[in-house]
Image 1 (cartoon, rainbow, N blue to C red):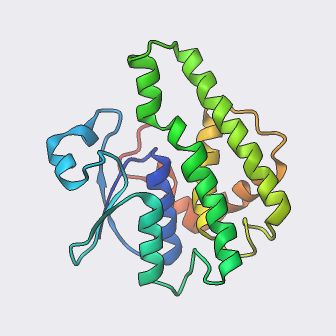
Image 2 (cartoon, rainbow, N blue to C red):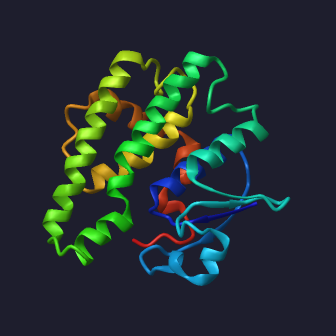
Length: 213
């Protein structure tokens, strides 16, 4: 299968983690978001949303949106489940994943930040303040959820789930952007535990063929 990806895209990072946890091989097809390759006519013909990731399977299935991709992989390769079957456990994992994927990430992705700077004329520092405000607010909410319902070394137990696939890229970006997360002790502990695992290391941005230092 092929994964259209950008090394520093948190949504691509989520899917790479899921593929690594499931032991699924794929060919990486780099899409340089900084260079605007996602907006090319050729790429839009593959993925009308002009975003990454995009998964193309060996049998011709083409699927965008990271959460949909991971759910699809979970149905096809359930031996390593990332979304539990039990209703409440499933809901708790999805609650965390959607807090990150629907509340935190959308207001801070590259195209939103570019619009703020290029079209609305905010300064680089104002743009960074925007990022830190929404990321810190969201991760503090995540910390509260995990304090209430989380357990184990990962978000929910001793095996990684979709929640961890989403948490790691979001935390990596927030720390890279200088967010103040000292109060989020549990979230930081889970993040550091995940980074020590081989599958998470394999999926890391600096291990990708399109990595730019």
